[in-house]
Image (cartoon, rainbow, N blue to C red; front, side):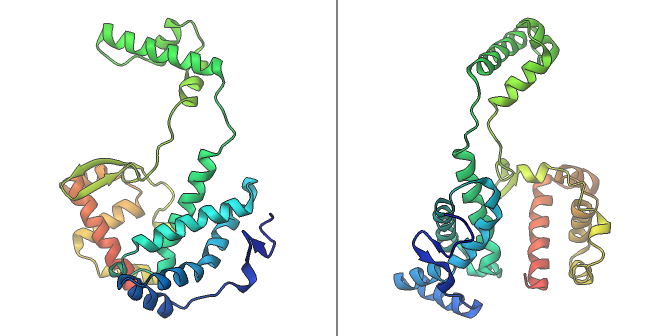
Length: 259
């Protein structure tokens, strides 16, 4: 069913209720007290949010009913895991979870399939790589692998990429006590440089509320696009400390900006 139709999954979207922030907060309090009816009301009161999110996937060619149901799963997960002490709006927390469910559904139901011949090349390349590593006690180059299996190196690269498992930016790569470092913390941001931030006076004021060390970390991470590892080296602390201070600084800034 098309996204611009009124009825999706038997729900008349034109008649969906719209809750205020105060109403949502009251319902969360009741849910914490064990009120199951409040949970149902909160779900129903946020179906418009699901509808607005799935419109982003309009060009994906998927059935709107299916996407709406998947989006509702993300909404329910957000409601069941939301922590009011975070001092963020529920929609700010819920939207990424709804989007994540939709993307996971689209990924898992992709019609793209790797051909048998490409898989065979990939498996030969992996075997050749392990053989060279065993004999030379070092990583094998693409050129060496291609020569070993008598294939062009471009085909070897294509085959290995085809069978590679997608990696989420939220996959943990290191954990030190309670501090978890994610893949996204290792990615260098070349777009969010200073010129795209300084125009926001409120943001600058929020940064001025930080400690000197927190300020420097936020500046290096988001103004200069450096990774946490680079920041840790520059200010001579561990990467885990950088991660902890960064999260604390961002939380303080969010509280100041009330977002």
